[in-house]
Image (cartoon, rainbow, N blue to C red; front, side):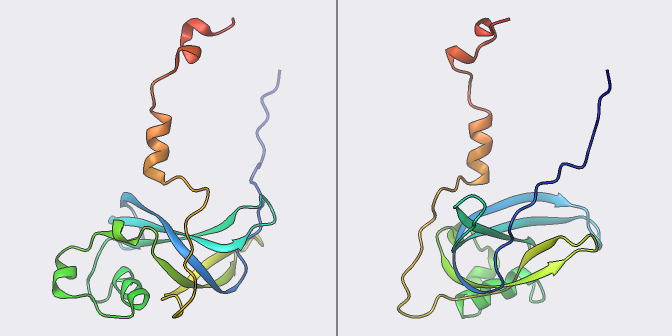
Length: 167
C-alpha cells in the first residue's frame, strides 16, 4: 500500500491592510534562534485585532518577532517607545517585564507582503498608542502559548488511560 505525502498547506485570509485597533494577547519566549546575524534570544509579541476573519469568525491575530534586547538600535526598544509614546526610563532599560504588555491596547499599521509563490502575509509595520478616548479592547477566545503547553501536559483523565482504549 502506498504512503502518499502532499503539500497540505492551509490557506487563510490575512488581516487587512491599514490601521487597526488591537490588544496584546501574548508574549512568547522563543529562546535562542539562529538567524542572519547568528544566534539571538527572540520573543514573539501577538496582537488580536478588532476585525474578524471571514474564515472562522474569530478576530485576526498578528504577531511580530523581536530580538530580546533594549539596545538603542533594537527594534523591540523602538516598538515599545512608539507604543508608549515615550522613551524608556533608565529603570526600564535595566529590565522591562514584557508580561506588562498583555492586555495593553494599541493601533497596528498592517501591510501585506507577497512571497515568490504568491502567498500574502500580513505584517506589522508600526505599533502606536490607542487614540485618546477610544474604547479599549479585551482579549477574546485566546489561550496564551504558555498555557497551551500546560494543557498538553495535563495528566490523563480516567477515560483517557491506556486501560480504557477499546482495542
